[in-house]
Length: 334
Image 1 (cartoon, one colour):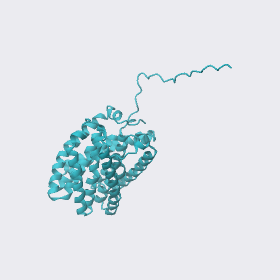
Image 2 (tube, one colour):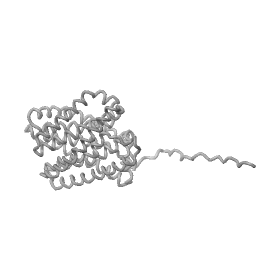
Image 3 (tube, one colour):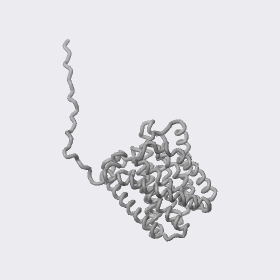
Image 4 (cartoon, helix red, strand yellow):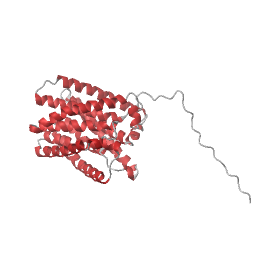
């Protein structure tokens, strides 16, 4: 009985490299992670607005800076939306990676802060932006849950970015308070509290059992943001004890970060350093809102935080036009 000859398959043919190399379409690789510093810049401006009120200083310069931050937010938002409109599936691709997931959550959160900037000038527009931002944040959170459910078990670990995706809606309480919508602020506060508590608990358990990789350690700073925001919103709602409790809890987190700063930043500068910006200015604003001695500490922290936020924002934004920010954060291309 004769055996049939072995059939050898051809190796898979790969397309030859393009020359000159293909250039992506304008803004087709917009990196969502840029919104981490957009969020920090808007938060810094709002904190400075509050500090100017407390110190009785003219707010013209601060409002001008807020206007510039608002223009940059609008530009970045339009650019990102144009990328998604060109190929909607790119949204899901960006949500698969940690920097993209953090950036997308920061995008809708920054829209909530943009609403707070607009309140003194256009309350109606501010309310509309706040509602749209909340709806967008809810859709993004649902997509993240869907992505996590479909991911392998080892990729379902709780990360500090979960705060941005599932607790970030509390940022909308800032414009809600300014607009007199205390009912909405109450709902956002009490809805976010148990979720943040679960994430804090799970993250602490993981941190005890497993040391996070050095490049991801800057994300630990995100744990400070919910404590700061809860304190800020509780102050606005007249719940002093709750505000002071979360301010004290935030102080513990901040001291732990400062004590381990060398360990947190050992991998060197990266786009994830944008995670330092908003939590720092949010906590400073929370302390300023408490008044008394805490207010003085908050003003000092705000002055120090402003230097950090502006330096990190400059470093991150400078990587955007060169394409390095998209490459280093695995941004999807439309």
